[in-house]
Image (cartoon, rainbow, N blue to C red; front, side, top):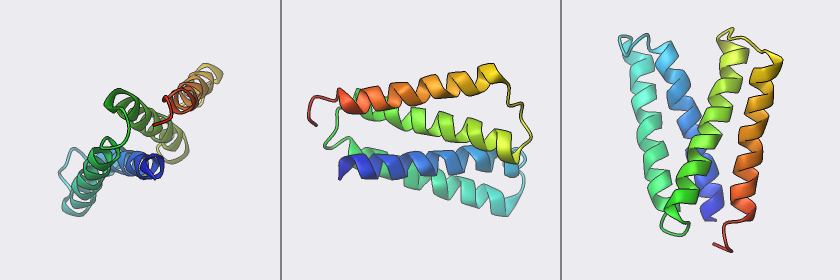
Length: 107
């Protein structure tokens, strides 16, 4: 269950990171409110997950999910470049996330 909670926390990390772009430097009230709400939910869920998972693993996976999701949505939603190298390095992060999950020592 902790892995599911951590995954959802990572999704909310993506939401707040993308929200930063839509809030225009936290100057637009509604996107800023959504960004702050997503940040709070993400942190609470991360805190819940680390009660059962090693904090180093959980944090690395959480940031990895956020990095992969944010970079991918940046390409799709924000017209950021989708170079072969960029996509390949996103793939490297995914491999790292899976590796950490597989080697978490049964936690």
